[in-house]
Length: 85
Image (cartoon, rainbow, N blue to C red):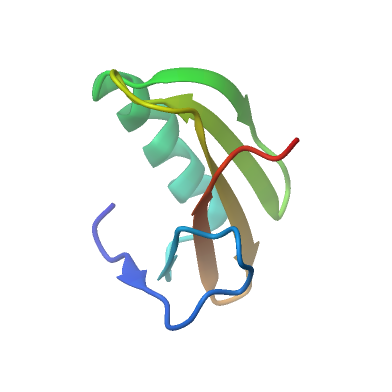
């Protein structure tokens, strides 16, 4: 997504990478909702929420991953991690 910037440090040991954008959570959710499937990823879960949302997806030749979206007044943080149990 345009405007995403990698964050410094990891908020949790299971986070592979995290990004931050000034876009609101609904915009970020809509972007991933459209782009993951269009890029050939199999989306197993797309859970929108108020300030928190989640996607579980599998790359064409890969292992299932999860994106967690956390929105606040200044934008949205996206964390890539293995799926939660």
